[in-house]
Image (cartoon, rainbow, N blue to C red; front, top):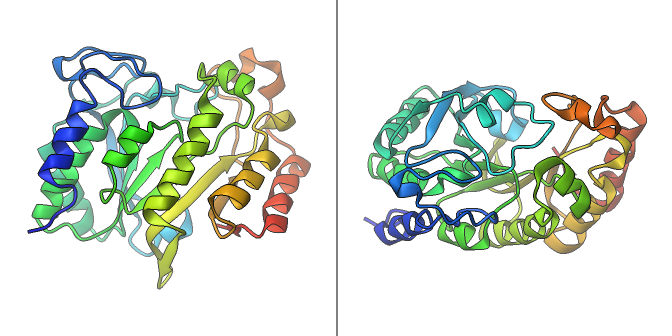
Length: 289
């Protein structure tokens, strides 16, 4: 049976965890022995929650909801994180690949339209193995890779054929802004590389009977005072990824966690700030979701 990922892909994925180079931070700790780098997660993923989610983008929700599995820890740890109890606080229960695979199958049986891995970058090998185990047991719904956009090309290439739908953030255009809020000055460069590679693998978003089955869906969070560089991000997507890219321009920024330590982002966005970003996306012909 030809099942993706293959056994070879799973082996290659685990090799990226020891020494760890699953993301651009290149911590090079031995995750398989329990060592911890920037993400603070060792040899086992931490599952924070799992269940049908109806608050995702409509093409992911369909009728049965998106089968979300939230993982604790993160390779970005944004100062304004909306889920800081999970990403920074590591709220979650240790799980192995078999347990995650069983959860995936349960979500499918409950009628979920897809399996949506939320914050998966730092636990990619375990998820690759889980997908293989679940596919071998009959899992038929698409896999959604719901990530922060700070990705390693090496890891993304190891994922080819595993993720059906990529849903990355495109957070920042300016390196200094990225460093200020995530300590990742190279975020813009890595994000641009990642979006191109994701699109190469899965193409534009394909929707059948109102439900996404494959492709790229990019999220962009509008931030106060133009901090995210929204127009530059959207122009890049239209010009260098695809003019038909599906994009969710999001208005839900809130000054949570440590955002109030940074006066320029210590407020919600205005209607005008959001409207400018949406108008830009419309002018570029992007597919607003």
